[in-house]
Length: 130
View 1 (cartoon, rainbow, N blue to C red):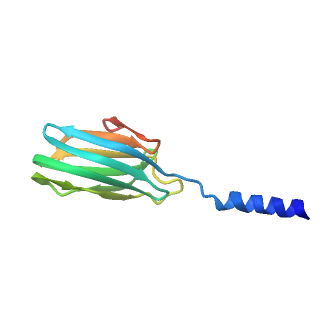
View 2: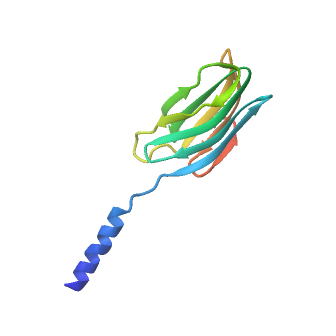
View 3: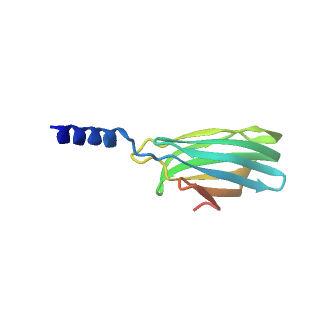
């Protein structure tokens, strides 16, 4: 009886521990005097990006969440001209396992790509969109 109870408690402890999909990575995009810098944080069904944006001339920032190569969500700031402040995003990743990577990039006022990064839930970012 005691062995059965102990086994039941152990099973409940394992069942109550959720699989964690959390992770974070440091985002840092600089183009001339413009920048977008902050932290991307993954949860099970979303990715939050908390960052500061400084636009020298006119710039716009975009963020896209992926599960592998499947696009899950896409958001952008408005076009900012010679201003700075917080530019945070919350991207939906409502699939089993959530997002494993994101693109974060900057364009000029005509949506010409300037610079970007691909960031991974594993905790790192690399330059370019991969």
